[in-house]
Image (cartoon, rainbow, N blue to C red; front, top):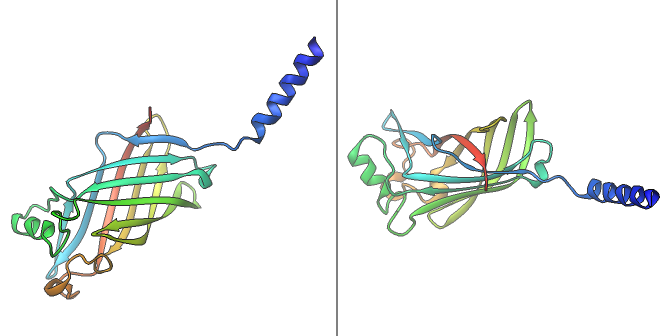
Length: 186
């Protein structure tokens, strides 16, 4: 009987070794931030979106199984200037009446060395989907932190077209930064 039990344990061990390791699943915790920075006629301004929700499957040792999904609420975007905030949500920019959300998804991750990574993903904004790379630092622990940056070319998504397309007034590149506090998904 002992030989059979040993054989079963050996077979079970082999089967478990053949199963690929999966990334850990996380959801966004309170205290996370997602902000943007640009300038208007040479004056730098920052803003935050109306809200965002992040789900992440990530293991630095198993990047092939990693996934990132971020839903961004465009209504409620604030820069501290009421006129600018109204313009940003108008049809000339985010057009929140028609496109209430943006979404960023990534399934391709690369190590940049140390605790630095890149997520090559797709941003969907105003009905347009384009590739965007998020570079980030991963801090593991009881409450892991993903701190990242990306550059979005606003005109690629039709944000600020028409009279606002002049890049000497508003640059095409918009800096995005995030600090996502994470907790295990249930």
